[in-house]
Image (cartoon, rainbow, N blue to C red; front, side, top):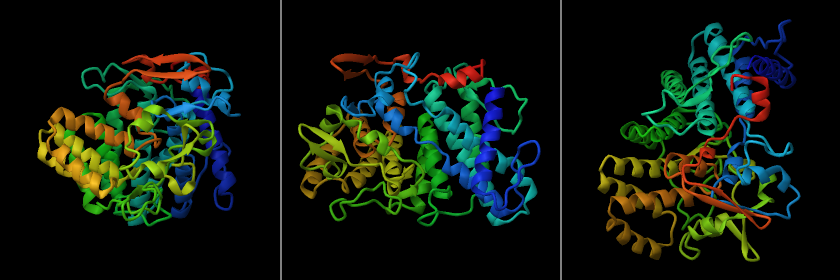
Length: 439
């Protein structure tokens, strides 16, 4: 990864200078050397800005989408859709491995340099804390794209991704184990907790990490590790700051909007516009909803003949990485895993009351209260599928739970991702493998 790291360093420096040339200088070795708090904030803003929109591509691999074979853009996505990872067409869109490391480069500048150069202040601590949190999030996405799903019994030997914590052109970037990467993510979140001092960001700046965004991330992190109590504790800490839900009976709007009362971190777009025209909602996804009683259905989908276009996502105002809906569903799932079935039912009911018609909720309340643990688990997973449709969570949820069989049809042929298929772990992109034989 030596050539790759040099590319990241120089390209990232060039980007930063292009956008911040009023106050960033390039030294002869090609590194950006900011000096002030504002200059370092500009560096981290670039780190947020280049965070990739990879979750759209993961949606193609799930049971959420059907390709529009007549779309002009289909050639860019077809091989992702049919899980042809080993030798895709050269025009196929590449998973953004390098872009995630680009974000990590910027966070490393803040963590390694700003923390030493800047005088201690609330603003400096917040900046460095955000950098730790953003680096943790980037590694979390990397390991869940290119590493095996977390399994405590095998994580120490399962192959993960390279770990880059310093700006070092001579470093040999060798993939670390899944356990090593998760341990680093946890270490980064712990450092972030010591430093972040803003409870929640104001609208317009809520692409930045705050305490509630960090707690939300930790809740997701520990959920994937099956550390149920830690996940629940983090969810409760986040909900103590904001527990608001959009009531679709009163306000039929996208809860994903950055100015929604549910918004916690408005950084990523789940389904980019370039892909929306190339796909329809899959029959499996449509079948997951009650078309008449689920208030999300007319918001998320628009009939197009016998199929449905997706209305969700594709706009900057719908960027959403974390929102309160996830906290409720995580709290319900972890409570159930901890054998607190009554708490799990109470939590999931308080959530779905905001998503169904009043009459439908009366019936659902009866049904949920009668469920055993297995049925309630399935109901919570189904609610996650419905709530977070095309937001990029489905692929990761499938990896951590059933790894179910999925069949995609394209041009009359069926393609199958079998249950527990190795392709639930995406191989490194070809250009990354070319630049780093260690991969």
